[in-house]
Image: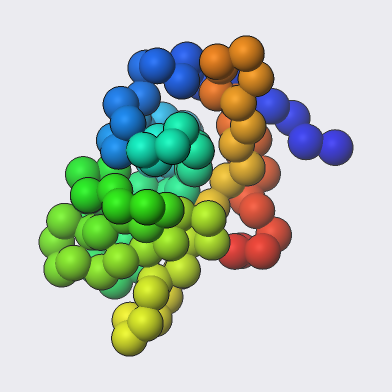
Length: 109
């Protein structure tokens, strides 16, 4: 069973932008794409731990601001030729509100 927590209104996250959710153990970047998809990943590039929330969103990918690694927002995986992965978290949108589950998505763990 997934426990959902409301974290924002969709309109509070700018298109092609992000917001950061700070938990007791990490920071999670919540991204909104141009077509209003929402993704949540650990705010840490697998390369040199750069803040992905400060990167540029294009499609369903974010480019790390430190060394231009491209990270797939759905899987948390670096795009080739780079290798590595960061955690992703389940999100959903209901009635214009964004919900997050702090359970790490098993596919990317």
